[in-house]
Image 1 (cartoon, rainbow, N blue to C red):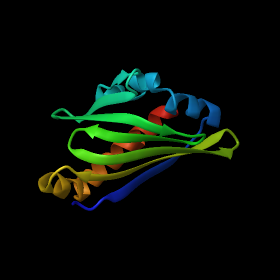
Image 2: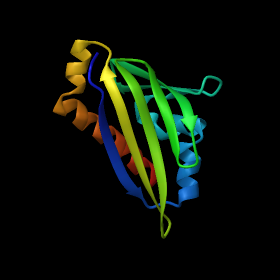
Image 3: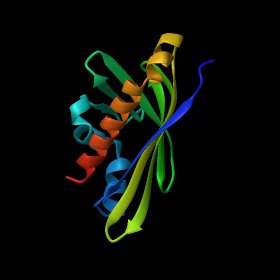
Image 4: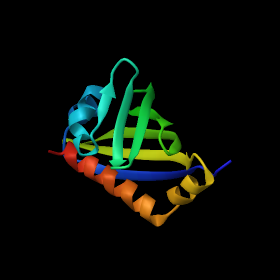
Amino acid sequence: MSKVEAIKVERTIKKPYSLVKGILFDLSNYINWWNTFNARVDIKTNTITFKPLPFVEVKLQQVDKGEDFIIFKYIEGPLAGYGTWRIRDIGNGNTNVSYTIFVRGKNKILNSIKNTTLFKWKHSKDIHNLLKALEK
């Protein structure tokens, strides 16, 4: 079995905790929030389908949610594992938001790609862009 490695991206958002939580915890917001990835949301199955690259489609399913986190399982696409959004009120109308993935490639080739600096850079860049979009 391939090694699962965590990749974490974190940013302080200059928006109140309640506003950020409202966006993160309501899947219907992901259509607009993730518009650069052509996101589609199915509320009945708690899934988000998106394209991080024109030739790659990923489907996530919300599997757990708590007061300050939401967990998605990678159910379709090249990766298997989980991703967790965490939020924390840090005062003065600011919110700390992080997204951590615990994933592996579904085969040796995909796992090799997942372990490259290019993949980690692309994933981190995409998440940073999503976090910037929360501030708009």
